[in-house]
Length: 63
Length: 455
Image (cartoon, one colour):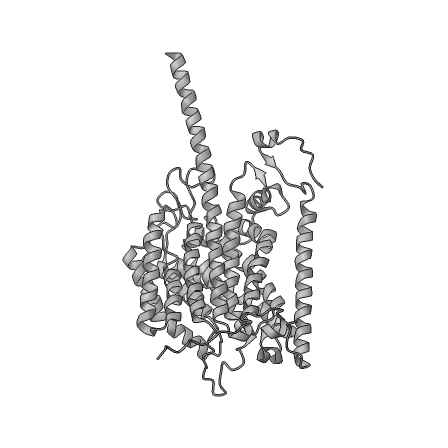
C-alpha cells in the first residue's frame, strides 16, 4: 500500500491518479462490498433476535 | 510592432487560459454544491418520515431512512454509475460499454482522486444523491412494519439498479427512449419519481398494511404520525433540496463535455437557463400548495402538494410558460392527488406518506403533461429534423417508467415475503419497533401537553 510518489510536481503538472490503493482497486471494491454484506447480515440477525425476544415477553432494548 | 503583437498574443493566451481555469473551477463547484443541497432532501425525508411515524416507532423509521441513504452511496459506486453509461441503447453496445469503462469503471482510475479530471467525481456525487432520493421516497411509504435488512436490499435495487436503467434510457441524450421516441423528462418526473412511487407500490402490495389501518369492512383508519410540525418542516426541507436536485439536471457551458460554449443545457443538450427554472419551480410550488389547500384545507396535504406541484411540472420545467407551470401543478394537486390517494386506500394499500400518489401518480401527470402541452419541441440538440416531443413518445416513456419501477419492487418484495423476512413480527409491531430493537429513546422525558393559559 501507500505510493511510489516522491514529489507532487509531476501530478500537478501533467495530471494523474493520486490515491493509495493504486493497482489494487478491485480488491478494495470487493472489501467495501463484503463489509456491507457483513453489516447487513449482522443487522438482520440482530433484528430477528429482537423480534424473538418480544415474542418471549421481553420488549425493551434500553439499559 | 512584431514584438508588441507577440506580447499581445501572449497576453490573450494567458487570459484565455485563466478564463478556462475559472470556468472549470466554476463547473466543478457548481455540481459540488448541488450535493449538500440535495442532502437537504434527505434531512427533509428524515423529518417527514419520523414525524409521520407514531411515537413507538420514531427512531426505527429514522434508522431505516438513514440506512437507505448510506447503502445507496456505495451501491451507486459499485454498479449504478456504470449502468447509467453502459445501457443507453437498451442493452449495451460496444460503444456504450466502452463509454462506461471510460467514465464509470469502479475499478478504474477515473473513479478516484485524479488531477486533471474535475468532473467525474462531482457528476457521480450528484447522481448518487438522485439515487438516494429514490430510495428515500420508497422509505416513507413502508414505515412501521418493514424489516430493516430486507428494506436496505430493496433500497439498493431501487437506487442502484432500477432507476438507473430509467435514467440511462430516458435521461441521457443517447438513451433509446430519447433518440427513438423523443421522450422528455427534464426534472425526472418519470425517471426518479414514477420509478420510486411505483416501486413502493409493488413493495406495499406484498408488505400489507399496518395493524389497525383497515377495519374488517375495508374502511381505513387514519394512523396519525406523532408530529405534524416535523412533517411540515421536513417537506419544506425537501423543497429546498429540490433546488439542488434540479440545478444538477443542468449542464454548464464552456467545458469539453458541455453542449454549448455560452449557454446552459438540459441533459438532452437542449438550451435552458437557471432563470427558467426559477420561474417554473416557484410557480409549480405555489400552484401545488394552493390547489391542495383548496380541496383539503390540511397542512399535510398542502406541503405534500408543494412537492406534488413541482413533480407535476417537473418534466417540462425547461419549457413551460410560468403560469402554465402553475396551472399544471394546481391541476395535479387539486384534481388528481386526493382521488389517487383514496383509490389506493380503497385498494387496501397503506401508503403512510402518500408516496405512491405524490411521486407515482403525479409523476405520470408530469410526464404526460409534456406530451399534451409541449408537443413538437425538438427533444434533442441538433439540426432541423431531430426527433420531437410527442404524446405517443411520452406515453411510451410513461409505460416504461411504470414497469421499471413496479416490476422489480413487486418481484423482490414477493421473494422476501415468500422467505418470511419482509415484515416484522406481529408482536414487535404491536409493542413498537423502538422498544423492540433501538437502544435509545426518541423522547426520554416524554412530550408535555400544552400548558393551560393562566386564568
